[in-house]
Length: 274
Image (tube, rainbow, N blue to C red; front, side, top):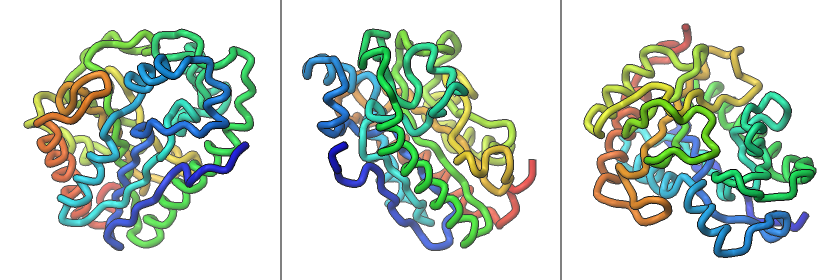
């Protein structure tokens, strides 16, 4: 597979910050070798990228880093999730395989063919997925070693209207959806997020998306790794499906910075038990 620029980037924060803003779905870049396996023509691919990309979330994380009193670390995917989705399981554990959206997608957001159904995902998984997972694991390990804890805030966005690929899209679609994990999302973290986003227009829990990202080395094993997924409904900060940011962008960035500052100020061990 052709060599490409680094597919992800760890942007350092303040040395004693425990917070990692994880931005997995913000990019549109697709290396040529990965593009060759996608069956869409260029115009259709651009429309698909409009729908599937969490547009401007890397910009949002950058704004939060600038505004926060204690600068968080940022782990940013520089390639589209149409190359690989680093938040999927790379095996049969992944429920999104039911709609052709495992670690390597074979279907689009509208369930049309994206790649051949018999695509072997291993080359893409080996080239992109595993190095990403290893680097994110190392970033969390470093925060644990330096600060005694790691707080992963998983930064996403989602469309106002349900897309056909969504398996659990029947529930409420609030301006901010907070995805939680029973082991890794303590009540204090969730309460701080609800308070921080109260002025954005409404907060919901685990609807339409649930769960949050934790490296598998620590998943359900290390309570000092806490995590929360923040899903911003796109109409609150941008023009859908793939347009520019709007006046709500600054409000969302301010709310997220408030959350970062709140959790950064907690002492080591404050979120270490469930």
